[in-house]
Image 1 (cartoon, one colour):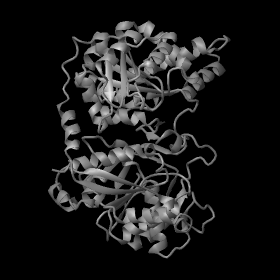
Image 2: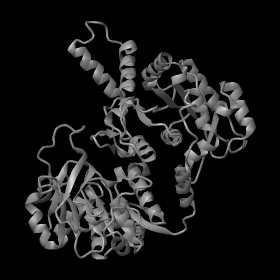
Image 3: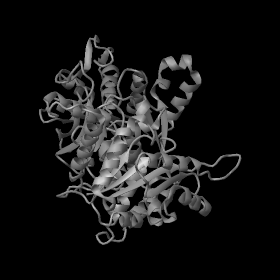
Image 4: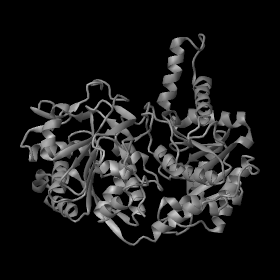
Length: 566
């Protein structure tokens, strides 16, 4: 196995995840099979209990793993299906070592960070890197490892030491280290400053790791003298100093790396030149350039709880992008904090309330994504009601579907106190209930998670048509609450149709509104499986409906299984 390690220095948030994904794309374009591992040095076992405001979205994998959002980038860029084991955390490592100690696996030895923790890290990496993730058989050719955080962080020290040992044990021809750093420009001086990168590389070398390549982040392309200075003080050849400057969209990053012959430097370091072919990125180039040429945009109102940090909805944003590009449109996402739509907001923050409603009314479609807790729920209900009454294309995901059920129960059926057990456990009419098999005492990994099959109860429903007239669909889930089966029959008298359910037929998964051009709610998260060239069917349907193309699309695809519009 060949390893490419991505580390970061100077500051966090430089884009190590995009860099790692892009390097994977370039190596894959050379005919190599690629897998990925993300190391997160935090003590959490996984990302499942972390706040979206603090850590961005929780990405869900097929096997139910709740992982860092960077694994979503890996899946989208490389078109692979990863497992929970591809995300290593300090919590997982320490938990596995302590479990071994309790079983007596260490034969009475003193259990220490070195060698027991570092050995566990190395064993985990070597084991996971051999698991195929691209549908093929046998291990991949290259494993791209991203080390989260910044070099020098106390919490990442055991991982640095383990990776130092790994590089020594596998040999130089099987290990390539790429250090991502920042080259800032001070406003007063206007000069590209190399000192932060010099110090970062010095810190890395003091820990026993020497970078083979530097990936320098900057606002503008690096000038020649800057590269020469970095080469001199960081002991990296000028040809191995890559510049990843700001670009209009991240699809350009793999193209940047290819133009700078990053693949040649990596292949030479890993002794893979004879096995690899010249990079073939024609389709990727067309995709990146086609987006730049799009001139028409569509306004999408995204009504959510965590709009203060757009990374909280990263997969939703990417799924909207994929769908819009397939429709030859640019997404214009209008971020609306659900609480700003509430009646209370009209009294306390009238300006924000007025702007929120003006934005909602001027949008071509409305999307309510997933979330937890009761904050902002009244605003979401008002948004769903507006979409229903004004025939505005609407997509509700997870919580968004439950919001629709509550709104229809209140507004159409007259059940004024209809609610979810999540928001008011004492409500007399709980149309949304806690799933009986889910733990009420433990939060981590206790939800209904991962890829599950949804069967269509109405074969000719709109959702089935969008999925290519499928009888069922496999999508990823992450929820604790469900539609109360006792209310399904009553709710369907309102015109609401439950068109999809699980294998039991009792757990409702998909809703549609018969009298509406596009009003769909799903309990699953279709955004997690969206890909640049394979947009999610439901996001595609939303954009088609918002741009007046849905009817023509359905007519032309009545006997086809393709998602992309002609």
